Image 1 (cartoon, one colour):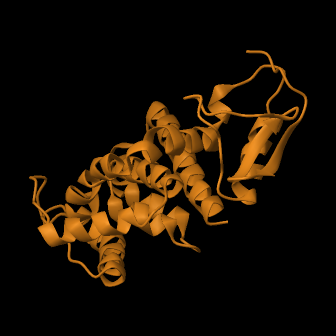
Image 2 (image 1 turned 120 degrees about the vertical axis):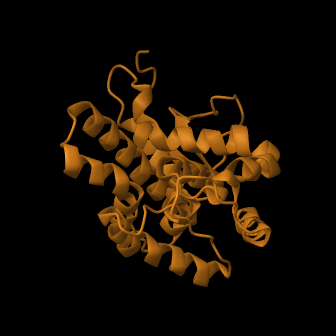
Image 3 (image 1 turned 120 degrees about the horizontal axis):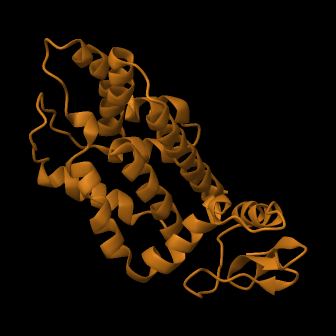
Length: 231
């Protein structure tokens, strides 16, 4: 699609902030009003629109897609959205370790265990660890605590959380990435520990590296989106 506007801007409106193209308000892909919670997020979305060239590249709308998902998919039914997030806590990858005599186990302990313990202290819950790939149920009270934590989030933050959790296969990493001052690189390295371990053993694959880099970019963008939502 050819670019059909000259100037994108962020403007305050009655319900919050919006993005305009040559003065006309942008809508979501679901044709809902694109109302944003603050100026920071609105300006970031406007920059995405302004940064487009003569041909619009939909892949460059990373923040817009998250905002649209929040408004079109999450806000209409927050409870259902939370239900789709809970499995990332039930099967959190940080809880599944290699056998204790496997060298990978030590690396998992060094990188994963501090993240798990920090989450347990911060959220006042307990995760069950397993030295197996077989499913290990988490305590019901742990899942209910996670549900309560998610219920405190707005739709925009839940949109970021969904992306972070799906890319990391970990609710613990996703929630840690929402914290102000989070070390996003360390969290991403934790999410890819096993993949990196395999690459060290067997060598890197160019196609796998390309996919990994795309996922890393999406992870960083989702963390940035959450930070913008906080303002």
